[in-house]
Amino acid sequence: MRRTWQVVGVAGMLVAAGPLSGVLGLPIARTDALPGPYEVVALLLLPAVGLAVGVLFGSREVLRRDPYLTVRAHG
Image (cartoon, rainbow, N blue to C red):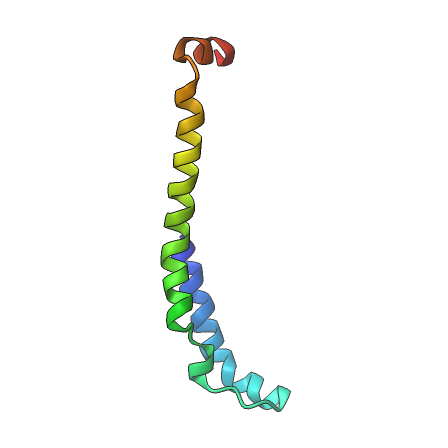
């Protein structure tokens, strides 16, 4: 779902680049509305890295505890 909104956002910028250029009086090319290669890499890698770090730290904390006591405390 998140990728869908990213595609919608880029498509919206491509459509709005021409009219905004005229209204604002600034030269906005259609290629300026496209994300650069570093932004694409960041969009693809940062969620995966964040998920991996969260799983690593979360699992370390959970695995330190006794499973019986954890279930007993939350059950």
